[in-house]
Image 1 (cartoon, rainbow, N blue to C red):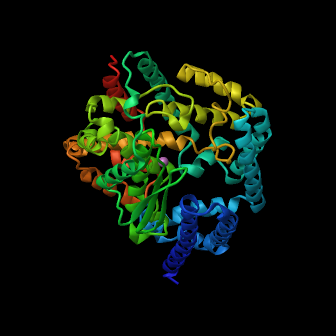
Image 2: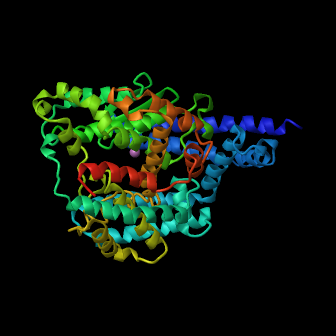
Image 3: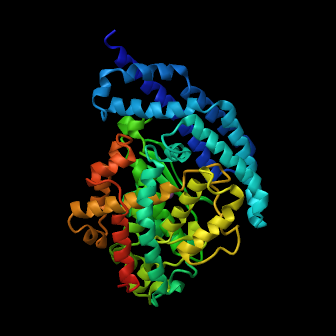
Length: 506
Ligand code: CO
């Protein structure tokens, strides 16, 4: 039986593809639900989605998969830890263990509790009544701790939860990078706040016809490399990207008739996610080797195109004359410099999802620290508002006037997602480190942007990141691509340089 492991591998891949196939059907339903479905269809859609989720779960926890993994883990495939076979074995094991370690009753309890807590949260937020939300938040925290116990962790429960969203990341290493980032970031935000230079926001905050916003966003999306042959752009209340199959990755955005930036940068963001999914290796479709690395790496791709490219001066050297042509009533008397400043406005604000490129990260660092301390039991759930406001004041210089605009603003906790937030800032840090390396590797990169050429950066991302799938964990990928471990320095250098110029800082 010398070919035992080859047979086992074939069988494992067949099963992985089947689970993935079911998941992709569920994604089609979800896309439809968010973009086209009539409201009355929601009840039956919930039944369809639950059926597919149950089917996928039952296939994914089949003990046969455990047996196949046991065979493969002792096979010669493991001699090279980055061979396709070893990578798929490692990652399918990671998923399988997660699926089987958490008891079915706990999964059902979490679904029940978070369904109720989200409904209560919507009301509690409207009424600014944290006490109403508190008992549900307490349950969510307790259940998350139970999940962590079942999954197991090295140092603290938060490790297990973080690993759910960013495989391989630990609280300690993430905390170290974030700590370095925080103090420098707080100083930068303060310096920007004290600068007397302020952009004229009326430039982008005025009526921009939606039909033309749509054309303009689409043209930018296509220019940076998102393929409309294998994708499409639709409207949804909450913008998202979904990969439905090897040649079908869809993105959505939403239009504000009184703001140019929201849909445009939203489209750039989702295009970055879409370009990543479109660049995954089709030969490995339905297996980890053909799947994205992590939420953080996914976010690095969206943030790179949205911010490092899309909010850059070079990008607008090319696109601003086109914006003026598209929106002559709005922009014909505006200079490139004034426009560029308006799309890069930085100011402390209460709401994370509306935050700019600089302050956004402080919102995330605060949430990461809050989660860490309530999971460790250092802050009781009932004391979260006070702890939140205190931190907020020290980072942003302002105190949230209400809990609704403070610790109750995000859906993550009511939905049960503890450990998710750090992936946003990890995404920004990865993006800055990748981009700095791309600028080293590609001569005159930003001069290319200025003439509308984005293909070299696109190809660089394809060959350095997209085609690898899950070959490397995020931490390792950063080292392989940039030659250095993750650091806050490239992000800080980038922010200081860009906003130092804009705000005349010393
Ligand atoms: Co994103």
